[in-house]
View 1 (cartoon, rainbow, N blue to C red):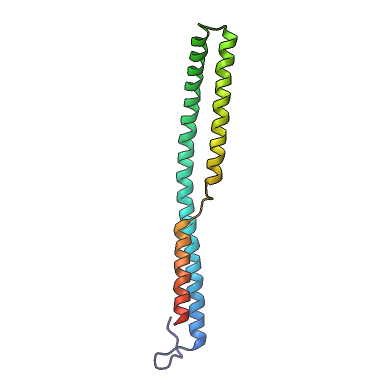
View 2: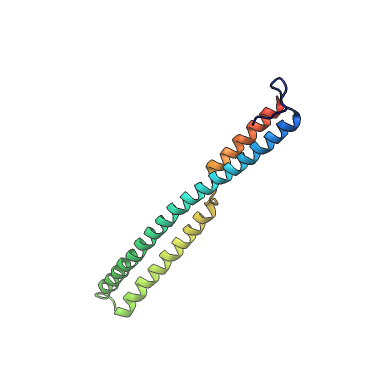
Length: 135
């Protein structure tokens, strides 16, 4: 910005403070836009991945049902049909409990989604401002 009342290329403290305020405002606005863009990109990837995983899960569920039926029918050759279904059902319940426990542990280890690039950029900006203020 060029001011009319500049003398010998020097600017007043008020002009410098005004410039600093405008630059900080622009910096914060730009960082917010960066964080928003990063979160949108991650959200799109997450949505696509979740949709594909969901479709794969439904197909796998049908395949698993067929395999379970085959296991019950194979066991029914040696045991009564009700006992074969009971054995296979019990084994499935044990597997489900184990998977639920492991899944719960993984969820607890997961971190909340954060716009890491934007956070790092803001930290660098803060460090730069602090270093400049020290000089």
